[in-house]
Image (cartoon, rainbow, N blue to C red; front, top):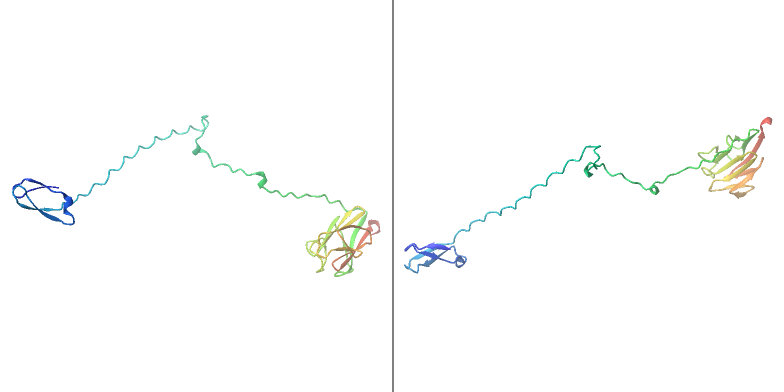
Length: 206
């Protein structure tokens, strides 16, 4: 730091590092031997650094030509991308509808209940394919041993096919468990504990 002698006015040079922890020191002027008290100078706050100049904004893009001008549209003008779905990702359930043959016109087909609940009843087959079971069936069977869809009788003109529908307790003809079997007029079969008889009656004799 630089100071002036209070006695002779000559300049005095003093190293600020010599202050140490002291706020003031006394020095002797080498010219007039005057003792001068020097105080630690207050450090001035440095001004904040000047921020770097901001780069100029880019020039705006030219507007896209109007529709029909023949120029390609800008990306921002495009709509949302179309989602592409792979065909394999869509499962389509197609039910195969099998044509049910009509009932024969010259005969009536019925099922008579021989034993079990409803014994003595004769149930007419209104279609050429009837399902026997406890619920949702064409021929309802009130039997706890019978499945909801237990068996099915198919009428193909003069042939009568009895099929088991994967029942729990099975379908029996002559006490033999069957999966599919042709039966005839007056033939008997059992589902659960209910015994049925197939009855075929000519229409002219009805």
